[in-house]
Picture 1 (spheres, rainbow, N blue to C red):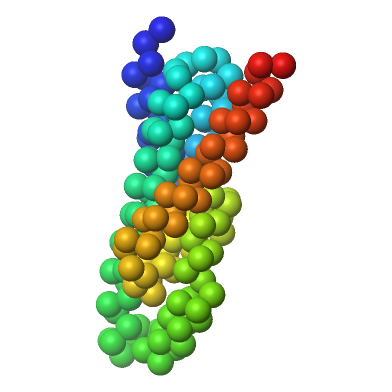
Picture 2 (tube, rainbow, N blue to C red; picture 1 turned 180 degrees about the vertical axis):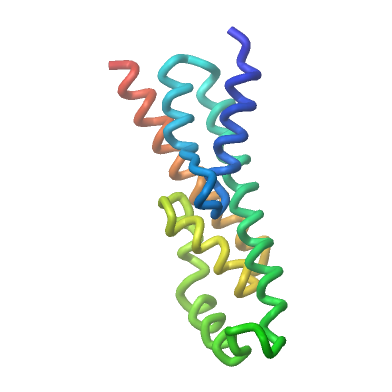
Amino acid sequence: MDVLPAVVGLFATSFIAGTFLPFLPGSSEMALAGLLAVNAGGALTLLATAVVANVAGATVNYLVGHRAAGLAGYRWFSLPPAALDRAAAWFRHYGVWALALCWLPTFGDAITVVAGLLRTDIRLFLILVLAGKSFGHGAVVLGTTWLTAA
């Protein structure tokens, strides 16, 4: 069986699912589980593909948020710099660790945009998002492997 189409399709689905684009629905977990269930590739290959693509999508969210943060100094931008500073202080105190929950639907996408908006250190962002996405997709692999083995 040729694994390449499955990997390419999973990468595309996982990338889209990792971004905060409401008009492009995607569920990397469902795609991963489906491909595992039909033995479309090795579990580690599919897991790595889904995680890398999902982290790449989350990084796009971060970059969009990061770029939008530069607009805070303009009069026409609706978020005053003082409000952004307060939000940044809250996020640094509580929110940065919430990035580990980036595997959760909707909330996870939003938190990656906020991390960019509040200019979270990209290295910390990548570590926490990689950990969160690995946890979420790893749970799918374990669950699907357990169910299909039964």
